[in-house]
Length: 479
Ligand SMILES: Cc1cc2nc3c(=O)[nH]c(=O)nc-3n(C[C@H](O)[C@H](O)[C@H](O)COP(=O)(O)OP(=O)(O)OC[C@H]3O[C@@H](n4cnc5c(N)ncnc54)[C@H](O)[C@@H]3O)c2cc1C
Image 1 (cartoon, rainbow, N blue to C red):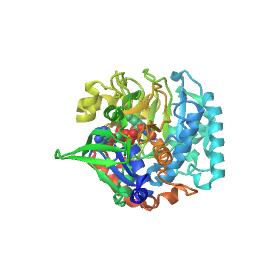
Image 2: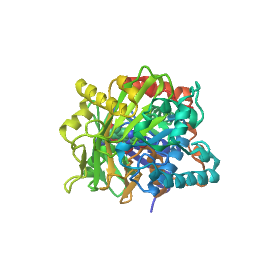
Image 3: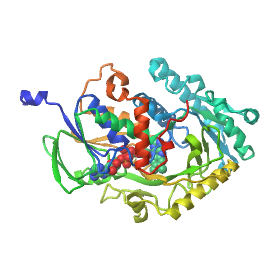
């Protein structure tokens, strides 16, 4: 039987890992008044693998189920409601080139289902209308329509989908594309503004104690909960006693699973995107996806726009975004998949300049196959890179959140950042740490939602600079 003082004591939770998964869980739990310890071995929050696209409908992934797309849509809507200042509102164009071997028609039926789902969500709660009018969720364009747009000047502040598509219409090589192309309201997502939002919110909540530059080196389960052994930068060891333990270590989740003796199958994949500058670009681009079979020389090309002609490029070929032996699995001996040393070294020590230039150049050439004028762009500094975990054995899984072991241990294993908020809510529900009643996301997070656009952008720019990226990646872009 618990004593009275135990019954009224606020539950304590240790979260290991301050990426988007752990930081969002900390923000959510701290807003609910819980006693939170967030332990991050790096110097700041949300500084792991990059995030540039909010997958609000999963339309970039033709291989995933409609159920996963709907899951991603719902999670993305909640994410915008939690972190409204982190998205770059502009559409994404999805084009199928002849080199892909597929057809644009494949996208059609699923888009109707996703749009219907979005309309339902808006009907249930008008606060869900964060992706524009449901009727404008997507729009198909014939070649004639795109050619007509190519004759127009883009207004200074594009607002309609048509206006956003003008640069694509002017510069894409229409002869290599199968029509129609589609534009969908999947927005950009600034990893630096996510980092800034979480950092600023947590700074304002004293019930969350952030231990940065502190690594967890041991965990032990007891009847009461968990003991967590941490070592800080100076080598000081500290033991924390908590009721609940959340493992949110991203691609290193397996190393804590090993310490906790909670085995789990998972995959880890190392990938990179390249920061490039197209100085001649004076228009505001949408994001553009040119589909292609993954891992082949025709792999998908993705152009993500930022202010001032800065673009992030992905190319799903083995010598651009993907890497030889870059996808590894856990084993019977360890839940932690082991990346080849040359990739681990990139994460721990950074990249050689010649590799940055070589891979960025290839990314630019790959994009120029579809946008010939892009060939004049040049590399613009440190690539955005990292390893991403995928729970289980299916490397196409994109919507994953949380799993529980025993009464007091959970791992948050997100593949896409937008799953982080749902995972946080599931932790609280499973452990019955708070009764949500009918409270809205906005009512549950007064501190986070009180942050201003200006303070978030300013903090995000500071973080971008510290992490050696151009400030444009932190700035607002779009409507
Ligand atoms: C090239 C690339 C592009 C991507 N693009 C997108 C995108 O556009 N949109 C999207 O939604 N997702 C994208 N992703 C996926 C996204 O980056 C990841 O899903 C997300 O960052 C995972 O967040 P996380 O918090 O789980 O892990 P992480 O961000 O890896 O955070 C885990 C944290 O745990 C800390 N840690 C680990 N071990 C310990 C320990 N023992 N003690 C203390 N701290 C520890 C680490 O330092 C790290 O900060 C992309 C991934 C890659 C690789």
